[in-house]
Image 1 (tube, one colour):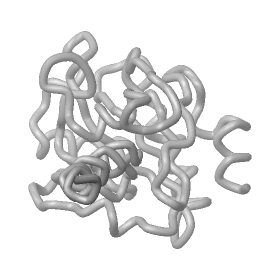
Image 2 (tube, rainbow, N blue to C red):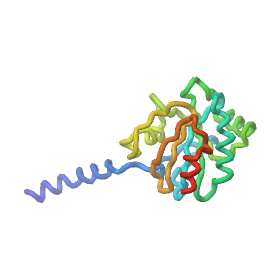
Image 3 (cartoon, rainbow, N blue to C red):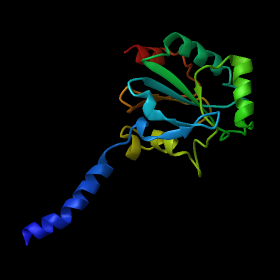
Image 4 (cartoon, rainbow, N blue to C red):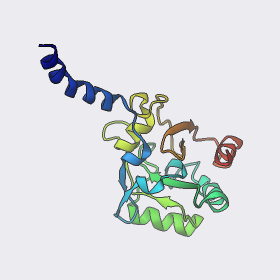
Length: 180
């Protein structure tokens, strides 16, 4: 009888164990700004700064600093991914093509830009659910408070920390983290 109970419970235990494991960045696929699927597992071994962007925001000039940080540190060990979002004050009204053109023309953006998504509320993209929910990222619950909020992901694909929107992409906190 004990063996029968154990045999019946074993699948339930393995399901519980799998669900208890936190997710990683590498568990997600996103759509890039050109409409192609991008598997985030391609970034294994790199630290990643994820930022929600907007073209008509007071923080929009951060694109310039993001590009400077990317040019200085980007490569085999670090990258930046921008996720345009229209969640705050309708400050990203454009299409993906318009956003791409804006970023190129005004800031020469060469880091990865993804298709426009929702970063909060109903319809929140699953990547941002992971970034904002402790039950998924294993670290903390965070609300996306405005455009240009930054999330730091370590080279193992684990959530590391959130950096507030008003904080410069070249802040001491971010640069020290990149250099660790």
